[in-house]
Image (cartoon, rainbow, N blue to C red):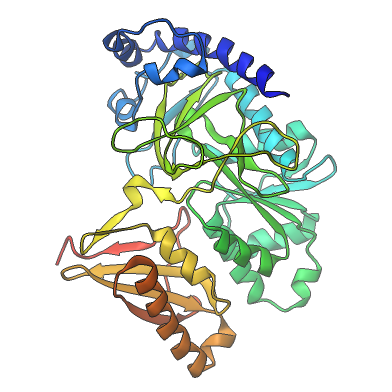
Length: 418
């Protein structure tokens, strides 16, 4: 679809989205206070008020609804990893749109009819699993709805049913890679997996290379959040130039986190999303808290939907150490770039801003004291150069650090109780 046609769709849908927003009490109040002049389309979107996570939390459970509860077909929630879980609602049409977006994403990474798809995430209240399953079914994939299970069980099921495509949160992708490494080499030969769709937590391209190298697959980034209906807002294509945002369903902006002013393409700031089709729970200019940039330029795949860069982190993920702001992804990027590491790490803060980085190495490196010592020295130097922070580095054996059944937690802040 050419850009002119896309922008025409956005213009028409935005006016409908505003009318829906007027049915939600807190959004209606925001619109009144904004004293809007005429809105003719996306070029005027900066005139609209922002919506924040606290707005939705404060009207829990049903205050964000734009339709009677009798029109709601399903309720999901966020993972609740950073706050009280966000409740999100779907009409039958919302579910149809969601399945279409997930089907697009799977098609975009190269999945096709005849592929066998396995979901490794929760298929309950969490917004991820069922959306992926409905999208896979819509695309014509064979679905194995295993859901949450340990890495060994996931790999066994993949082997038994000839799974070719799977969905996982990135940290669980690492756990799958770790589990496969611990098995005999013959295990990989029994697997047919070739593609993975990953999302729901921040990760880096360096972590992707770890997952891809060990599992011998192509892994792709997928983006979404519960407030806008879950995963399916944007996804990488096979060229991996960035995440295509489905602009016939969403308007994407990047703004200055402090001032809220719109930024130009290639300028890094906070992602703002306006869903255009949400019936049950419309939003206007939702401040995601995710840090990224809009990529200027076209993609070889031919899609005209613009791309955004991988998330550098979340505003609330940043920690202050001796006056310096640090995103955990900066540390992850350095650690994952070393072949000796298996990608598992932990940042421990104690005392008065003392920082310790603990990381695991693979079994071969652990058996080589010289390699361990060299990695320790190298990483301490790289972290100092990258972040301007001095840190202690501790190298531990594979399996030492705690694993989470949900999103990975890399920060242990003991300063609060010191």
